[in-house]
Length: 404
Length: 231
Image 1 (cartoon, each protein chain N blue to C red):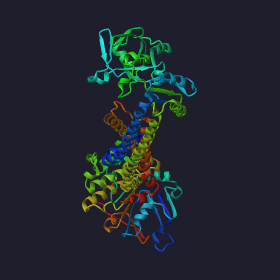
Image 2: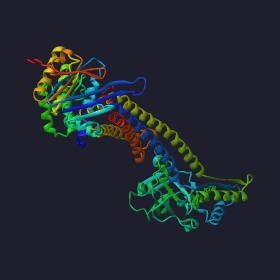
Image 3: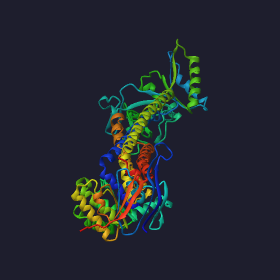
């Protein structure tokens, strides 16, 4: 008997035993699909959680510091940070101008007060030449703010990726002039979009030298800074030093200072994610196991029935290997189809779950998980599908025929 | 000499208290073209004898030569080949595969023999026609009566044209009229030169065979040729 014959026989047998084939497939389909969906949703969730920290920039130290008497903390902090270049990449005031601001270019007017359409709402922010570095922006074109811009309070600005598109519609904005509350500013550069879900304002910023605080922000106190550390370890070290430095001249009687970092919450979330992945992964593994047991059950229940069939086949001259080949192909085909359907269902389920649970438009499972679950089910199905063949084909035909 | 067995023993649970000697030293020679009935009460060992002769089972001790081949020295693969090419089986319970239709059942031994597809179908239809079942070629066993199923089983046994047909109580599950029809087919095969071994507990059926071997408690108690009138 050749291979083609074995294939034909296997397909014939599957087609004839629809119920058993279907039940076997069902176990595999559910097992594979549930593993794929659960693991993918967890991975999607984790990726989403971490995306925030990646886009916002890691190793950021948030510093709040001000002194009642109006002492210029900015310059002190700036100088102090420059004194530890081995730990710190940059420092910037991080001020969002609270007042209504109107930005104009040509016929277009944008407002910071656009509450009806918050996705298009813009922010005017004040920062130093290191604002981009500290907040993880990448320069898309032109140049960043320079130290001279700050020192001389130059009328220059940097645009966020989205506002640049809104105002200039893909024309190069560098060198053009916009007005902020009637005051002209020359665009010297723009940042690439971050496209962070839920944070559209990050791409809608107009960055001005922080020295405009006096004129544009009613000279309110600058009390918020971002320090960018070089690494996670540097973050810890820099935090300690900054805290000590600020405490050196700010106390409860003359002001306020606080040093914090997102790293610790990033770590918390990562830990949480790992936990969640383990719990859901465990549940998924159990469902795969249950699916596997279902496969085993169905296959073993039919052993007797199939033993007789094997007896008949042996009695009319089937060789052992012909019988094993037939059963192997049969099990492989059933499990293969079941596994593929399971992966298909897993993909559909993941898309749906991603949409409704995470609000992701295209959450897709990772290939290793899909392939792993597929292989597990197929191997299990094939092993137990072949079990009657291996067992019964070794018997004397008369013994196999005796099975009732 | 087609079949030659010497001192065949089939012993279950040997050496234990529950020891059963299904065959207790059986020797038998059957020539090509004989029609032999093996008769005995239930438990006499006749089915065991057929299983051994048909290579469905191995004897505990003894020698078995089939057409000069030492069967006891063959491996599993060679035995499968013998069952496929040399012997056609007819069982009391038909033993058709329920999921396959009549034609596919008859084709099975030809598939295992490696007969090409078109030739296979031709041979199978021819065999079905011989037993008068060609019109039901595409019916499943569940759609046929017992007699019809047995005729399909006979077609399966003869499709590969084996030199020996072994039938174990082929009429056991049939009424007397269909039983007669089945016996008629066996006789026709005999007339064409096929060696036929018929196992039965029914003396009436045994009376129609040219040679009757009688078994009791695993030993042959009589072996005699007889004249029969088949007309």
